Image 1 (tube, helix red, strand yellow):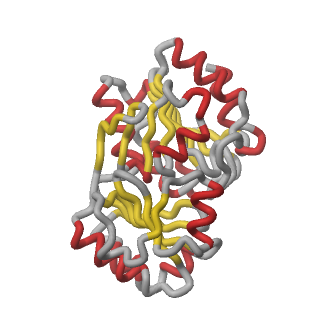
Image 2 (cartoon, helix red, strand yellow):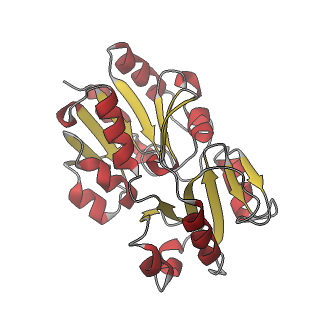
Length: 264
């Protein structure tokens, strides 16, 4: 019996950067059908809660949200679970991230997201594309009055390459680093991540792994697979993700996840 369905968003349900209206409306019908049967649906994404809610607008009050790479879990607007970075560690990561001259930096807090400038590709993409609540604060070290849950290094297509020489080796033993698409390297607390969000839901509602189904496409989704009775990678997923999944479904353009949900 299935009691919990968890799905990544970008690259799994929609394309990167797609906002409100991008999700096939048939998903809303399926989510309503499944939740009416007592099956919980959680969107688990690097996006913030507001961005996820906009994408799932017709069913926003019927789903759970694991935002910022699983560092936060919400029931509607109620924060149920949070993993934050110590401020001294966060500031040192931000300082190092800003040394990557070709990259930009986004800091995600429990209230909203933060960047350096409104006049940047990152700001425009996150606000206009993803529908983020984002504040440009200039100095990311001194001007954020919020608990920090995630720091993301951004480049439009070379995040993995540009963070590889020294940034990732320096921080990989101190925080959890995961690649999210070709644009992002996410830095979250060691005990955070998508698996921690899934584990929280399972513990809170006494749901067993064998009663859980998960869907994903990228490196940061692999950790969820061990907590699921059935894990699916979409066809467009990274090779290592498909290798670790129990099964492959069609890519997001062909609504692969939707087709699986309709069979439940």
